[in-house]
Amino acid sequence: MAGKKKVQDNSSSMAEAIKELIEERGLSPDAVKLAVENMLKAAYKRAHGTNENAVVTFEEDESGIPTDVTLYSRKEVVDGVYDPVTEIELEEARQLSPDCEIGDELDIPEDPKSYDRSAVSTGKQQGHQGLNESYKDNLYNEYKDKVGGIIIGYFQRERNGTIYVDLGKVEGVLPVKYQSPREKYEKGERIRALVVDISKTPSGIQLILSRSAPELVRSILEAEVPEVLDGTVEINKIVREAGYRTKIAVSSAREDIDPVGACVGLKGVRIQNVIHELLGEKIDVLRWDPEPTAFIKNALSPAEVGRVIILDQDKKQALAIVPESQFSLAIGKQGLNVRLANRLCDWNIDVKTEEQAAELDLSEIATRQNAQSLFNDDYEEIATISELPGVDERVAGLLKEAGIEDVQKFVDNYESINVEGVSKEDLEKINELINQNVEFVEDDAQEQAPSQNAEAEQASSEDSEEYHCPECGAVITLDMTHCPKCGVEFEFEEDEE
Image (cartoon, rainbow, N blue to C red; front, top):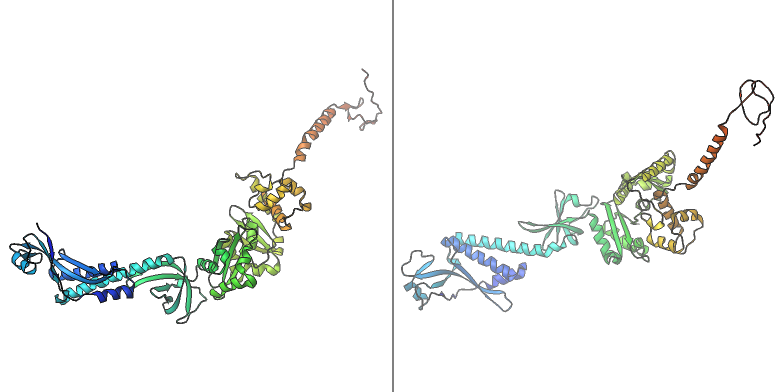
């Protein structure tokens, strides 16, 4: 029966080289074994024209790390050799292994050092390529989960505006489009950036970094504010003009937590740490609000807004009216503040001073809004406070418990409402929601109309009978004593039945 036999090799092992690869480059034993096997087989193929019969075996220690490697040429024992690369004569085979028989396969050790230069070069090239690919795959798997997170590196060099960052095992690239325009770095200076992508290059792995992304601010806030990290405070939206200003809308589901205060910190320590990390960029932390007018007011901070008028609900156009002293603050330098507010709220906000607004026909705007609400196909009748869009459910619940659930009752008693837990600001906000969403119809006029019509009809029936002067025929009335035309005197007598 044909079998496989192996001739022992007493050549030196590659154990030291293999251990160095594993330790220095952090490769797994299996990756090193595969690379070495491919290298030896490539050299074998270059020397013999094929590697179909090349066999590579490893000896391993208890931890699975290769300690030795051997390359064999597997040949079939035959009587009459046709292909010396894959076949061996029986007589020659028995000199290597005395118990060989025809049909057996014999693994004969190969010495790669005996190959010519081209074969050795091919093997080395294949081995280096395999090791590099394994190394890159290893790094890719290690760093792929860092996308979307923060990483710290050091300024290495700059080329054509692109900054290259030393991250240790890998290289970071900070393209011009992801840089903050007001930030400059010196060689060796620390850089904290957001990882936005990862890619393989011929030399290894590159991490694409960003210093301008809004998510960088989110990640820094999570590191500085525990309430943000654990979800107690939610960051609803961040908009940013990198290097100049950032606006952050925050909220909290817990009534006992002030989301803005949590982010700012005691004496502003927390937000100052974020500003320092962004190299002095201004940051506005404001409260998110589901009600558009309130949110627009907040979004225009640090300016104080008098009132906000919704011009077109569908097109999301609004007018913000501010005192003259607050106008430049609301607009911001080169319109930056209002531009960021637009992006934060997803509304087109037009800012006017009180004098400028006075020149506008705001009553006409209000009339147009009411008409739009009346003829809107989506219009629904709102009877209770809880049905108002964007109403604070807590406040609505407290008012309901106090017996003020109906919208009409709220309006009738607005000035005198005093409910524990409901502030004046809460009442003003509900009143504003009612003005925006509820159209009141006067029922008294409709109720009085039938009686007024009946009286008119009766008067009309009484006046339908005409009287004429007996002399000249002029029209006269029952209260006359002389004809207004001919002057004849007369009097009226009731008919007796």
